[in-house]
Structures are given as structure tokens and as C-alpha cells.
Figure 1 (cartoon, helix red, strand yellow):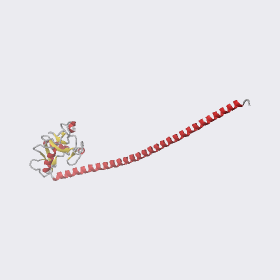
Figure 2: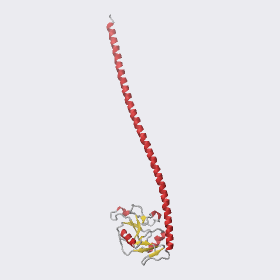
Figure 3: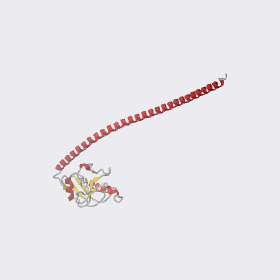
Figure 4: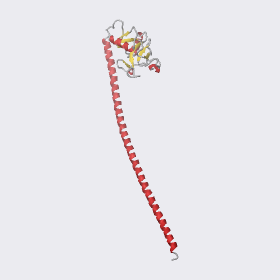
Length: 239
């Protein structure tokens, strides 16, 4: 009976410790469970996002492959069209040569000068490029197309002053074409003046320069000017 008090206190203390440890274990276990759920959710979300990214990458890869295939097809088509254009150009040259042979004995109208297969006329007045072309067409001709070095040399005797020719980039800036549709790249283009064409150099004074005129000697004398500028012009037609 003498030891019952202290023993009871120790027993109560032990029970308290056990109870506290049990509660701590419960709280710790609850924390672990909560943390596990949180980790699981984070892992699930990450896996879901990763799957979405992989799907997007796969879709982008398919689009890339499709674009590459389309690019390859366009490149092949462009190569084919380039060959067709070159072939057509050669056929056109041959037709011009045959036409030239058939016109050798034909004469040009009064006031016109004949060179090779064509007749040329230097206008007496000055006008804009569009007015110049209209005048040539009214005469059954068009502004001159310089399609060979020989033409360039021969016309130096005709162009005694600055004159419009049938070259422009009205459709697309920087893409020069002759009035017969021939791109400048197929005809010797080393006749530009130094630093030309320059589209006016960005100066508002000159404006957009989409039409070409030549200087008097026509040797490296092509220059782009505003189509509204007044120059004489050179018409060309077959006899």
C-alpha cells in the first residue's frame, strides 16, 4: 500500500507518453498520407502535361514532315517549270530567227530604221512611259525589247537622246520584265548604269521608279525612272 501512489503516477506517466506517441504517430501517418496524395496528384498532373507535350511534338513533327513534302513538291514543280520556260524561250528564239529569215526582203515603213528582223522608230516628241507605249501600239508596234547584245549595239545608233524602252517592274518591285513577258534574267542585264536600278534611292523627289529609259550611247546606260517622266521612246515591230 505504501508504493501504490508512486506506481500509479508512473503508470499514468507511461500511459501519457504512449498516448502522446500514438497521437504523434497518427498525425505523422496522416501527414504522410496527405503528402502521398499531394505527390500522387503532382505526379499525375506532370505525367498528363508531359503526355500533352509529347502529343503536341508529335503533331508538330507530322506538320513539319507535311511541310517538307509540300516544299519538295513545289521545288520539283518549280524546277520543271523552269526547264519548260527555258525550252519555250529557245523555241521563241528559233521562231524569231525563222521569222527574221522570212522578213529579210521586207522593208520598214518610212521613218523607221531596220536592223536584223525588226523595224525601229525614235519618237519625235516626249511623253510618259504609258503614253509612249500607247503610241507604239497605235502604230502596230510596242516599246523596244532588247533581247541580244547585237540589239543593244545597233540601237545605240537610233537612241540619239534619252528614250523609253519596254522594260519595267510595275507588277512586282525589283522583278524586271520586258513587255513580251520575258524576265530580265534571260537577257543580258549588264547594261545598267552604275548603282542602278535604285528605285529613286528612297527620295520623294524621284518617287517610285518602275520604268526604264536609256541614255544616248546605250552602253551601260539603263536607268530606272518614274513612269510619269517625259522622254522620247523607241518603238519596235516586224516589217
